[in-house]
Figure 1 (cartoon, helix red, strand yellow):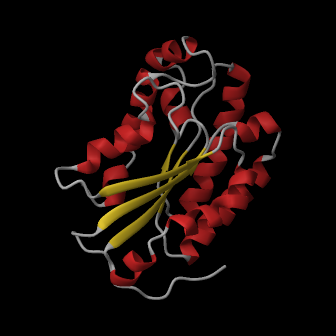
Figure 2: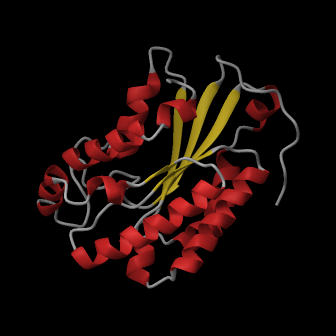
Length: 214
C-alpha cells in the first residue's frame, strides 16, 4: 500500500474533504429529506464559510469484510493529490459500519480484524478516521448481536484512540427511534431516526474531530 509523503499541515482556510464509506444507512435510505445522519451532522458543522465537502460511497448490506476489501481503492479515488501537496485540502474518513456482519454470520474476531485492517491502513496514509457503529434493528435478536458487534468495534477503535459512536447503545429502547423504525417498510429509520443518529454523532465529538467546533 502506498504511503503519503510529508505534506504541509492543513490550515484553518483548508477545505475539509470527508470521504465517507458505509452501507445503506450512510446513504440515508428511507429519509424523506434525503440527508441521512451524515448530511444532518455535516450541516450542523458547516458554518457560513461552507468549508466541508462530502464524498460518499455506500453499498447496501455491506459487511466489514466487503468494506475491508474496497476501502483503499475508494479512498484513493477521492483524494485530492494537489490538495495533499499544498495543504489546501484536509482529508478525513468516516466509516459507517452496519449490521450486516450479524446477519451474515461473520465472527466477532473476524469483524475486529476487518476493522483493524482498515484503520491501520488509514493510519499509514495519515488520514484521520471517525467511526460510527451500527444502530438497533427492529428485530430484538439482531439487536442483541449488534450490541456485541458494536462492543468489538469500539474496542478496536479505543486501542487506536479513534473516535467511535455507539449508536446501538444510544438508541436501544429509545421510544422515538423504535416508533420511527416501526413505520419503515425496511429495517431503517426515517427522518426522526436519522436525526437521532446525527445527534449522537455530534455529541460523540464529530465537530472537534473536524476541527469546526470544540
